[in-house]
Structures are given as structure tokens and as C-alpha cells.
Image (cartoon, rainbow, N blue to C red; front, side):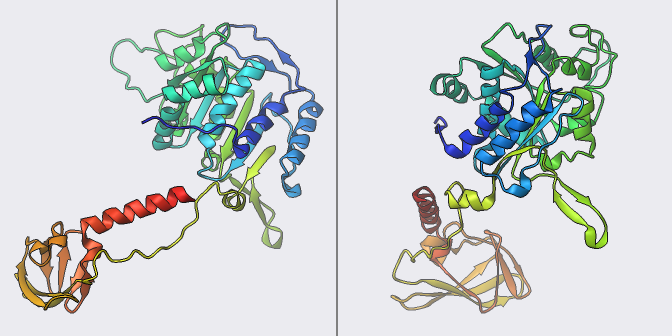
Amino acid sequence: MELILQTGLEHQEKPVNAIAQVFENTPIEQPSQYFENPVFDFSYPENYQTAIRKIQAETNLHHSLRKTTHAENGCLNLDIKMETGTGKTYVYTHIIYELHKCYGVNKFVVAVPTLPIKAGAKQFMGDPYVQRHFKETRGYNANIELCELKAMTIKKGKRYFPSVVRNFVEGSNQNTNKIYVLLVNMSLLTSGKLLSRDDYDFGVQGFYRPFNAIRATKSFVIIDEPHRFQRDQQAYKKIVEELAPQCIIRLGATFPQITTGRGKNRITQNDYLNLLYDLNACQAFSQNLIKGVAKEHFEPLSSANEKVKIIAIEGKNSVSVKHISATAASRSFRLEKGDSFSVVSEELSGLTILGIGTGFIQLSNGQEKKTGEEFTVDIYSASYQEQMLRLALQRHFET
């Protein structure tokens, strides 16, 4: 079954357009090497700051958040805030395609904090359907070549330069229908010597240190989950100092916080850098972009209202239980460790006694029942649980 992607969703189109519009009046130089991105000239702050202020007004950003910062050391920072579950991965993938189409940017580094997030990003960006969606449905005449950086074990003998970095660096800007994306997790930036060592037997384009090779591409960096990449931590410093990107685009529901002042003058606020778009939790819920939580009672499957009561626990060997029904006489049973409750009711065929302790029994579903407790047969039956799942799914898609 293929993933079905919707197009033209306003809350996803706005941040993509916002990022692209920032560079409209920024001078751009063509790359001097085939492995480089075009070079954006940020030496005239009024060009991009005017654009940023205009975008902030168009996206109805709160006045307290309408701040702009200068590009530092040739790197411009841009922020997009989107609530979890509103399509952040889709948005930054769309941004990659849009920047390639508008400005010829074809070298991107996507930095994520953890391996599970990395796996999700890889699965999405590398999915053939996603590639077709952006090429055919969205009209981008390009494909992403995903380069996933993984940890390597250096063996005795020759030390081979990381092939993933080689492929990323050697991707040519002359191939106008290719976008090269290097996917890297935080620990690879900060731990080990995979990217920092310079004693490989072979290099790429004269670079024997992977960090230097990536730096030479003049990449754009996209940071997922920015609160995990605080600016005073090593991972962010490695991105700025070692990769030296032209632009850092941060997308997330949560951003790092900074604290200034002391005592009564102490102020803690989000560490935004040229925030362009703010889709917060309240807005996302109001627009039905994320789900709320609702409780719904599920009626019993039968009218018998069957129950099982723990009557007595006889040492650690057996337990006496009573089957109570609204339509039949009560019956008593004696069960031992390992016995199934199916002898009490057919609906309880999946429930067994795992252990018997002092005054309690442990059930195979992880619950414990004490002397005098009773439970309804319906809620432990497989058919009841299946119907609960069906109802939950039905309600999910109704909203």
C-alpha cells in the first residue's frame, strides 16, 4: 500500500514559500567548481532583512516574534515552527525541491538528533512514491539522491574515505535534475573521528578530511528537532564551524531557550533566529491539523453482563472463582497456575493464570486481581478488544 500525499495544504505551502522568498533580492554568484552550490551574497543585510520582515507580516507572526538577525560569517539562519504531526518532514523535503528549482541549490545536509528520526527521514525522502509525487504531481523536474552517513569501523590496512561523503561531494551541479542530500545524525557530528580525521589513504577533490570536503560544497543545512541542537552545544558548533553552510534552516515544534538577566530581571525565551512561520499547538488544533482526545464508552457485547469474581486464594496452588451472569445461575470453579479462564467462559480463551501469590493472582494480560475483586468478561474478550480498535480507527478518520 502506497502513501497518499495531499498537495496544496495551506499550512504546508506557507513555510515553503516563505523560505524561497527570503532570497529573492539576494545577489547570487554561479559556482566556480562543479561540486559547489551557487554562492549567496549576504553582505547587503537590507536585501534579506526587508524580505524577512515582509514575510513575517504576511504569515501574521506575533509582533513580539518579528525580529531579524544578520548573517554571520556568510551563514543566514532561518526558522520555521510547526507543531508535531503537521507534516514537518514533508515541508523540509518540499523546501529542498523549491530551493533547487528557484536558485539551483543542489547540496543539502539534513541533521537529525537520533537514529529513529533519521530512519524516518530516510524512509520518507527515499520512498519512490514520494519522489514521484514531487516530480510528477508537484512538477519538480528533479530527484533526490539520498546519501545516508553511517558509523564506520576502521579496519587494519587501507583507510578508505567514507563513500557516502565522496558521492555527496562529487555530485555535479551540471546534472540539473539531481539534488544531493546528506543525512546525518547528531552523534556522527560530535563523536568519533569519521568526519574529522585526515589520514585516509584516498580523498575526494583533494580533500582528505571529510568535514573539509563537505564544507567545500557550500551546502544548505536543515536541522530537524532544533531544541536538540542548542547553539552552545557541540553538535550545532560542529555544523557552523566545520560544515560552514551558507544557510541553516531549523524546523521543529520546540526550539532551544535562552536565559538573560538575573533575579527579577531574569528572562527565558525561545532562541529564534529569523522566525518566518509559527504554527503553534493552538492554531494546529483549531485548524483540525492535529487530533484532540475524546472518551467514548463502548457498550457490552452481550446482555448477559457476565462477570468473574475472585472468591478465595488457597495458598499458592489454587484459586476459587465464581462466574456470575444475569441470564444464568452462578457457577464456581477451582483454577491452578497455568490454567485458562476458558473453562469459566469461552470468551476468556486468551486469559490464563501466570502466578498465584499471597492474596492475589497474576493474569497473562499483566494485571493482578485480589480476593474479592471481580471483572467483566467482555473487556477481556478478543472480539471486544477488536471492536474497540475498529471504533477508535473509525472515529479517527471521522475527525
